[in-house]
Image (cartoon, rainbow, N blue to C red; front, top):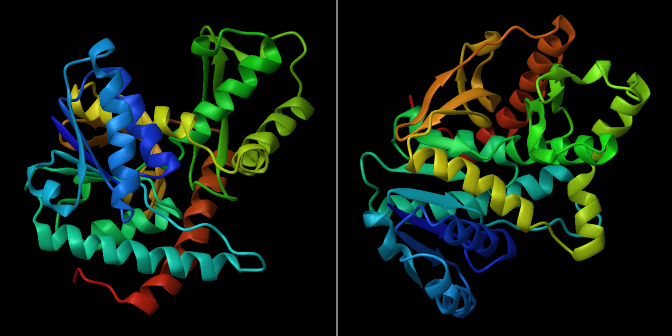
Length: 315
């Protein structure tokens, strides 16, 4: 299957491309970027390593790749300017994103193509993509809290001196300030996390706070996150390509899960070749459900502001 990464010249896009190359599952990776020379350089660098990894077609270019793409991954985005408000950044990124969607529509999208949105604010832009592309809602997926979830697990594992692959913990809701940690099912090797020596509510709060600030922490130290985002993107795309039916905390337009509707956010989602295969309304602590619904309301307020400015396509 062919994956085209829009924004493939940047840190996130190129990291996703490299993660997919190392995964050796997809057959073709195309890097698209407004800076065509940068995308070409990233593709060439990956191509040089191909003989030691997998037999894949690795290339770069423009929107001519879209009609033959099975998965379109959009990572392009703008960074916050000094003294710029959150809403101003959202408006600028939305304008950029709508421009990209228009080019994608103009190029032509396969009827069964899956669109994976990574650009921020990912939940808002996932909704905008679902609204404008004319694809079934199930075929538009946002990276959502998949990145937050693997960051969360990594920090728990580090603190508890546990194997990272044996830590299970979820973050749902918004990829942003109103994200919700799901402590009710958190465990290490299927053993409840709260039963482990040294665990406490105070430690839980500290780890969640650090998780929420992980993006800013990485930006402060190395200007931007790349590797972990690339891995999170690979998790989602591999589940699509291999039809793995993995349950992942990805964002999609909700139609009633946890009584949340008409907003995109992350809930436990079965991801396969057709995109969103199912959503599971797993029993959570009442407080977790309350916070998840609150996250939906927070996103809905921002979404209404954005839609009032750019207009809504679907009727």
